[in-house]
Length: 164
Image 1 (cartoon, rainbow, N blue to C red):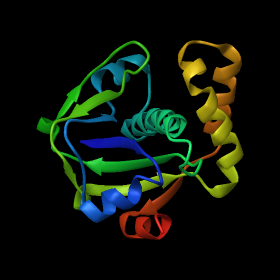
Image 2 (cartoon, rainbow, N blue to C red):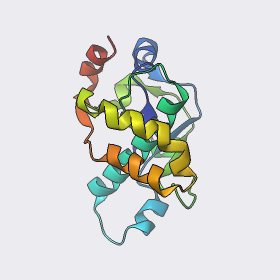
Image 3 (spheres, rainbow, N blue to C red):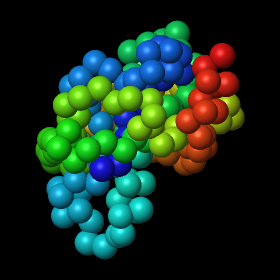
Image 4 (cartoon, rainbow, N blue to C red):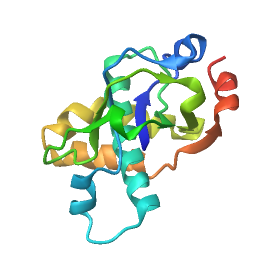
């Protein structure tokens, strides 16, 4: 199953050095049955895109907690055995999953990371993320503005250049 995990540019070098995403259990996002139910239509690729966006929102929360990291969302896409993934659905996060085992770097398919030009909007969205989660409309608009920036795709072997 393809899962999407939120992280930051500050945490990325540690993941690369360790050769795995750990420790388990890990929180992530995937095209779960709850996500499929919440979309009347959409193929697997579209549902994976939605799961990736949910992980990008989680990356905003990580950025809000770590003021020293560059203001760029980071999402790692990995392929893990279905048996290691448990859906943890709740109303506002239908793609939420728990992964029961560390994910070896060789299972990471790609990284999705904001370009530098997105930093001002991502910084504002990170600051507004807690208020947006609480339902404040202006904050939700600010967080949504970060979604206007597409995450760039990076092959796994390219990730080390981003962490330098």
